[in-house]
Length: 153
Image (cartoon, rainbow, N blue to C red):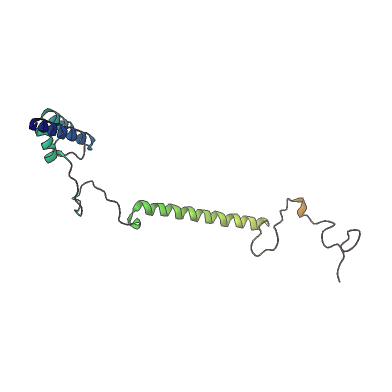
């Protein structure tokens, strides 16, 4: 029975190390190329996994430890420290400024055409192309028969 447990322990360690070695990025593997580590683990099932754990496995950073110049990139602590977040704000602000400028331009064009109904104008705006907007007979107050406007003096 102890032999079976020893064989299972060696087999499970070898399988774990092979999977971990294959999944590890080739730039993170230490001391030997990735292919050599896989062959070592497969051909020396007792020594290979131990060697992988000791010398080949990438170092995991401990909590509170400072990076030693490796390729480890940490997320910023706050959004205002994140350059991606700040770039997104810049894009949003640029879009907002463009929309405001476009809105001002449209308002100026409408006021130049006389078709704008701004806050200082009363009543609905009349479009010059609208036939109902033209003044003609029958416009104004009618006080008597015959639809003639009556002047009040």
